[in-house]
Image 1: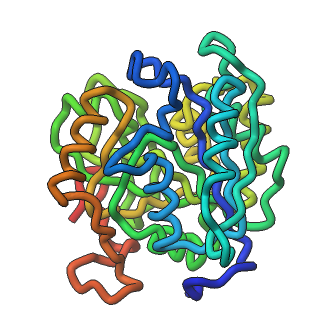
Image 2: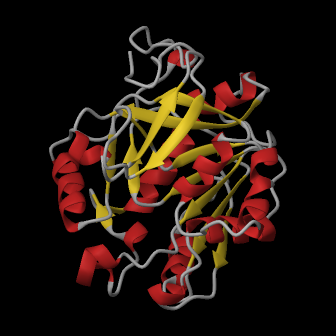
Length: 291
């Protein structure tokens, strides 16, 4: 098991923040979505605090667009890090200035991997989601299961109306994801994948092949659906739920819960002695629900 607080283990992160936040309307005219405040701090600060609380990364690569690059540069410059406790942040500008020319999430990921080739495993994450589980759990699972190319946290979502707007997965008896259905009209299970992928360097190397074969660059779910047909991808039952900040309603809900003190408390996984959390190897039933 990885020692917390250590560096040099090869883990890095790619955070995707090159979207234009069009669903948030005027809220993102002057401020990129990832820097909108929740609880008095930019959303991205909370995301990095979550990472620091569970993983000690060697490097964070943040992908943005040309319109928002100046704001992110100021944010990076203003982050106090006198004792170098935090991983260094490398900013990648994807060169686009409007939604019509965006590269897509997979295109942005490919650019980040090309500019900063990983030395080890990589956490790939969206910048508009807050979660409460401990990232050490899926990272340790990937370390232990050498046959796996990736681990994807999943949550149980019983509402079919929500599932129709998410990536829904089917798993086998060993917790392997065998199918992913993006925004299915008739959801085949209640397990939905979070936009956080814990990927080996081998899996990262397949991103360029996926694009070269002519697959769509827009959504990470498309790459995951392709990957599970070729490699072992494991599901990790993530405790604590999620908050999506992609809409005004989602942003308002996140701010309200934060102000009430109801968010976030990171749920420590089995590696941290929590008896209430099941082992990630046995916490999934076949394509139906979290046990």
